Image (cartoon, rainbow, N blue to C red; front, side, top):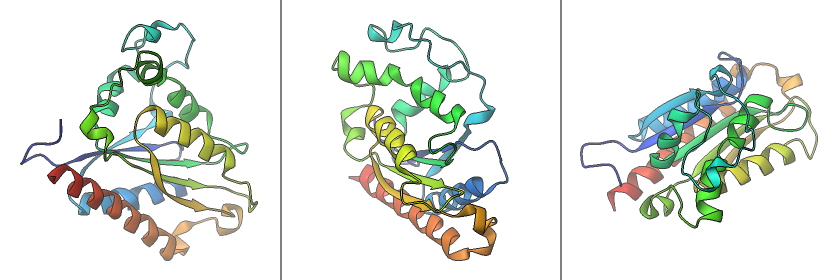
Length: 207
């Protein structure tokens, strides 16, 4: 269901970096500030701090709308079914998604099986019409294919949870830039895109 008249739309912000004061976290904080300014509530999940196991391919979720494993991800499934939009922020590691965040994404086979095997998505139809994802990523190197790996994983994850990736901020050459506090224009872009996402959600849930 859409938020009630007195309830703000809900956005989840996923941090894929273990560095809570690092450049990825800084960009995420600016996007979160923009979304909150637009009128949304934002729940931040620091993925590397969660205690959970990677997918064990038990296949319990083929016939059930939950995972057999009970751990730090279990309580997040309802959040992801009910959220109004999503922000993902991650560094590139070995040209892909860092381990904790990739394992987190893999555990959403619960949503995949419900949607594609049982034709019974866990996300309500009205929410599927407007949910969007803002994807933020930084890479140390300055190569044309820096973000190919992380984008493919993010696109697949966002499709599985019915929250399509519709906007992104990709920052190359962090080995040279080092500290994004020196680049206010990039931080401003994160704030602006976070606010745009929030404004989109606020407008959608009012309809």
